[in-house]
Image (cartoon, rainbow, N blue to C red; front, side, top):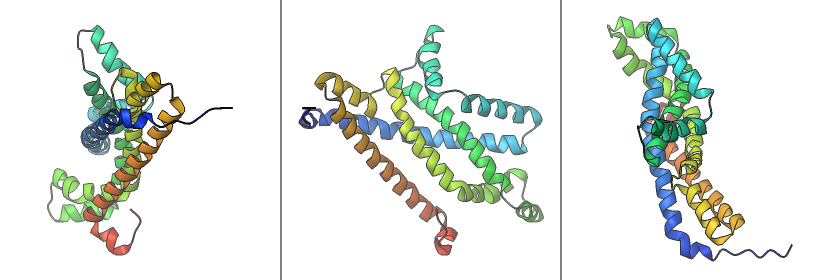
Length: 227
């Protein structure tokens, strides 16, 4: 083929790559927290809420889970601009990611709540705990512990989904890689390096979340149960 690999551009574009890495990580962090909170509230609403609350939560979950993330972020970035509500690329990306991960987290957490034995709820009632106290202090910790591996997988998928935000000119890692290949015409090398960086980021996130689990779930640590 006669193609010669050349990675010399790395030294020139290293600051741009670092900027893309930082934005990817920051976008992930500020999306995980509100997404988890939103998903947990939706799960609680679908299980214990009144009929109107359950309907609203169900519509939200089904609408988000059955439409592409790229369409959702396009609607926030381009669609709202038509109505006069302009969002910058980072804000639109974070809102879209938070809403998206919230819908998937809602189903994961709902499974966690429904897996708790009925006896736990009866014991909480015997202790005169109110409904909110029972959910917060008894059910929520157990639900998170039971579905934690699924949550970790969802958060990792969300980090990888930040690459879609390059479609609205967010300068995260994939967006930076596209700019580099357009300047250097070294698409193979640029995207190979980008793939390697994503592998490192995913490994770091997985190890971080594993460390959080070791600290948060001492019972699993003592029993040697996989996290």
